[in-house]
Length: 259
Image 1 (tube, rainbow, N blue to C red):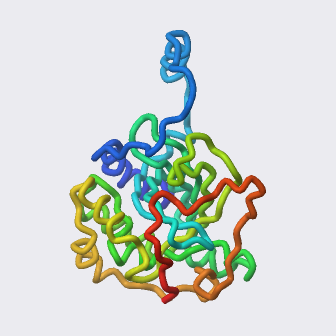
Image 2 (cartoon, rainbow, N blue to C red):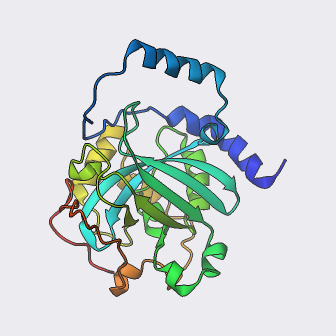
Image 3 (spheres, rainbow, N blue to C red):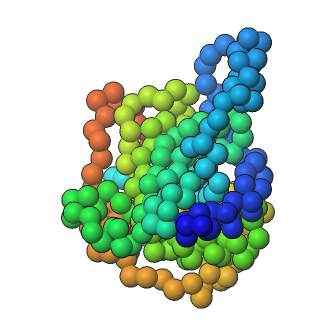
């Protein structure tokens, strides 16, 4: 058995059990007529008859927070459903909730520190580090035993993510309008909206502060100087000719300091 397969098998049963725990509804209702009986029958038939290997590989559920690169006060919760491709590469689809009608917000690619170090300087500016997300307790794997979550966080603490959001439901958009936007992760205390984090913690029955204490023994690797370029004022974002982007429904009203 390959190493990445062994890791996936060890965690899959536990992580899958977390999916659907502590319901988080999508913040928007999309326009459209309800599904007709024929459509529902087609959906049911496809569920039974069609194989879906890429979807079945999504066996890790992570909940954390993002903000728009260049608009750090526009923050939102992000539900990640991830496939562990190998020891150094994870790919995630991101939803705005964990219920059946949750909206697909975007994608995140997660790579190891070794892979990140080999990237060109310009490419590195698009990626964010995960050290603070893990060590602060902001990133959680809902519903699994502490030991399994600790193992997963030890794996993630030294990784880097590149995240694009394609449907901005946090801004109240009921359709995927505008262009994809590059997202970033928090790097220091005081950046994330405390009320947003507290609301998430209450919904899942967790305490980020306690998770911070539990994760204190996890070694914090040094962050590559090329990551989190927004902290140095190097901000890349796709200009949106539609003018679709606003302040963000969960904007805290203040930008996080680049500490």
